[in-house]
Length: 487
Image 1 (tube, rainbow, N blue to C red):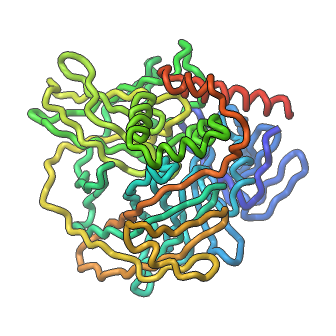
Image 2 (image 1 turned 180 degrees about the vertical axis):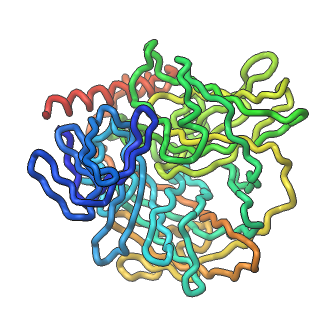
Image 3 (image 1 turned 60 degrees about the vertical axis):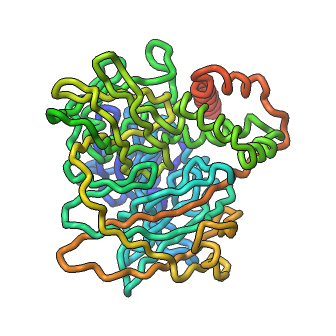
């Protein structure tokens, strides 16, 4: 039996496996089991089915026919401002909702790394998960996160940083990058921190997987259609899917900007914990090596590029075959538009063909587009430092957040948070503004490090290609079997 969600964990919409988005009425929901919920309920889970109303008519669907749930969770803790978050969760991983709910004190997307909430004038709204995957100080990194919900109120911008998972979040610095531009202009960042004008981005022409399935409806727009297959072996027993995308290519184009809206998959986020847990009581040694030995950091990055669990190779088809021309970085469950600059000088013809080979269960893919326009003059950007930062205990933590140095704002417990205020420079008439949070930091998961390491499995994962993906598939099968036995 699937876990029932409370009304505060309202399922407001679903994406079916056939690619249909169904949005639910906010109304009374009454099921054959006799349950009745408050008027603000959207849908209820019971006996592996979902019950709701659509345009005032009763609606029922088996969870086996659903790919994603879209959930709004409203925080009622009087010490936190009400939060409304809509996030996608793969239905194949439905029971993980119960796991995530048990480990959180407020709404989030069920990943690791700190959560960032933007004040939209009425409430704090979930907006970003910076430096995902920076699981130790040696992996500390900078991150640029678009803040789509942040609004100026009384001359200020307000953010809330929150630790919502069993981990310790260490934030080194935060600042806002304000890019003022013409209305309608679109801006996105690449993994190196550079901003790009992607106003002329063109949608893909076609997209198919290794079976020939048409993925264009899933990948052509940033919407509620997200391609996130369950972590199961493919039809031929493989551990990766292969997706080939094509785009129209203007004659003579030598450079392209791939604009991808992607995130780490639900199971992929959970597997970070599982992979670290394999190290058992040797985990502190692993952290020490990553933090203090450059060769260990280089080895980990090379392994990640080989396995593509949290960074994805982008291949370009040229006259003599496929060539890796860029890397798509992974992120938290908060999907971001990221630009991958591509060298396409050796592409022939009027079509650009790209290939990615994501391991099953590790990636959630929303949309892809390509912009061929040349880079114009530098964008008009203002850097804004915070003027106030107070944590959940009333302490002034501004000095820890002003610069990238040896001082960190540390949130060691689930439920810790800090409110950060920035000045909001006036926007000139006739201009629009895109806001990015530039943050730097890392986090460490809270894990049981008392048991002995699984040396055999660790050796396989280190040396055998796709052994980590195989481990993820096996863990998913084990988890699903355990859930079946509990019914």
